[in-house]
Figure: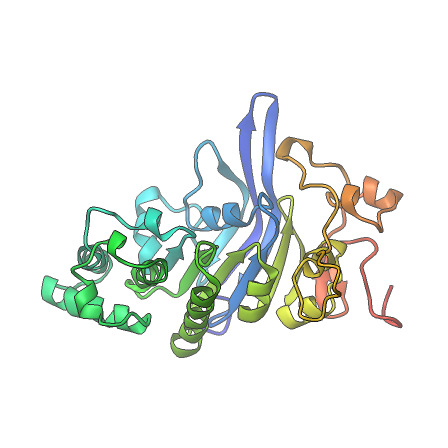
Length: 328
């Protein structure tokens, strides 16, 4: 296909509360091309995981999609019946979550879980599903894949469990993979292995990935583009190399400054963004980031900025950071 694989347009998610309605996602829009890895980054509570849940129809009640639309390969999916969404998950969209132990049934062997998943989404008999299970385990880099079929999740290391979760997500041969903090519980060496695996899958099979993380270092090493979220909105989006080198939004710049570097001074202190993310019921008017922003003016307090082109990215900021001699 020549167009985007996934299109999210003006997505809004709300939660009813005692004193009104809380808007948790407010006009989120982005797309993902075939074979592309889009990183979604921001502090805890920014709306990253909520956006993923809305896309795949896993919003926890009483949360609901209050507006916008989600299209997969040009087909609208956010208004599908529950059963149609269930069939879509696993077959056209795979999902990986941050704790592999919660994604795997501790009472079933790896083989049983893979075979059941394969037979749910593909027209295979038991023997064919077993052979496909061995193949998909091998594709995710698991050694001795046939022997792993008889093992239970608790018998595997954290890295192997996460690879099994990836294998389960890929078993139905989806076109899109949503990976929500897939390396959080892993040590640094295993993190690197899992991220290389995801990168390789996009190059070999054309798989598209939505990679959610709070770690700007992980995003910088893995993704093609990045969307930075704050208080339920995207505040900057663009090519990852541009955002890493020349962030336009002050919040993005703060995230980048908090990433450790080999070239940092010897003080041992990392830069930090003052203050904290606002609670849902306390999001300020204007730019939600203005209470924490050193560039805030009266305009920022009164009017909410929309995404606009700033050099090579799009940022929602009245006073974006620009290169010397660039646009103001």
